[in-house]
Image (cartoon, rainbow, N blue to C red; front, side, top):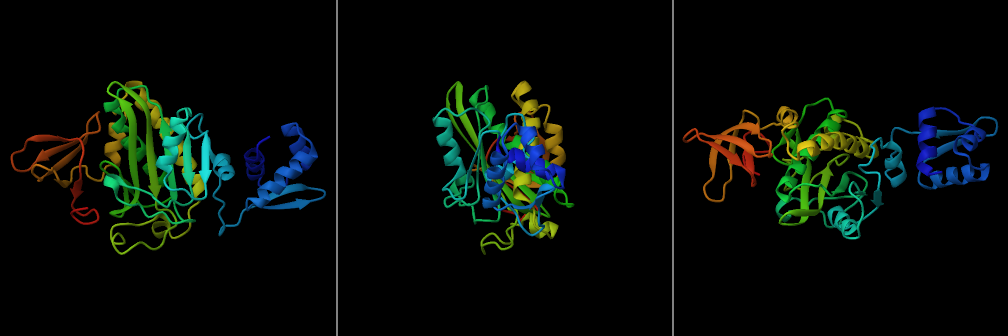
Amino acid sequence: MKHEEILKKLRDAGDYVSGQELCEYYGVSRTSVWKAIKQLEKDGYVIEAHNNRGYKLVEADDTEVFSKIEIESCMDTKWIGRKLVFRKETGSTNLDAKELAEKGEKSGALVVADMQTAGRGRRGRGWESPAGKDIYMTLMLRPECRPEKASALTLVMGIAVAEAVCEVVSQPCKIKWPNDIVINNKKICGILTEMSAEPDMIHYVVTGVGINVNQTEFAPGIKDHATSLILEKGEKVNRSKLVARVMHYFEKNYQVFEESWDLRKLKEKYNALLINYGQEVRVLDPKEPYDGIAHGINEKGELIVERKSDGQTMLVYAGEVSVRGVYGYAV
């Protein structure tokens, strides 16, 4: 009997559940049930015990338990995130996930942390990672495709985050190609995918996700460009449930992705979420920046841009793309 199983049972009941019922349901002794209840209380859960009625989970609106047990009790996936490593504090969940991969952990392992001390974004940029506020997680995968296909996983994760966030807030949640999630033209999430591979074989891929959930203040350098779910929604958001919903959508989209190992069956969904779609963009090409109109992505995840200077269709594979109106003109 796992503690998250009892937690889920109490939560689903919404009322008292007798100790005898729990014993019979899990095939364990009353002592085992009692010990599980006590452990849940140590983890921060409030559980009422009544001699004649049993146990009842009390969930206050102003409290949140963010833990391995809580996240596992919210999960409904078949294999994604079922191996869960939770840390109150870590350097980087991407580094932790790489370590799991190097030790032979199976595909689908998820690392979640309450705080990072060395969080990173794209191009080595720092990612502010305070405790008790946001989501920092990394999913490790072993896709059976060629290495050049793996970059699309950033976009698959982007769809999953956007779909999960859309359940939480009423405002439209959009994707700024390739890896930013935005609400009201401000960034709430960044995604960083890294890979270990040989020319024709992937050892593993780690996709890190940082979501601004309950953070209300940002550093001067990013406060004009960043927002959080609590600022947009006006109330706190349960991080454990959101982690589980992101994994729910990722598993569904990944199943579609692995049918062809490209985005041909997901690009319509992605383009519907793309804030760049039909908008003027500035492509910061190292050789020569240019302006154009974005026309969505292709099956490889490349951004299709019609260059304004000559009408030529350009395929943007990597690099920065700025969009007018989205946290300024240049990032």
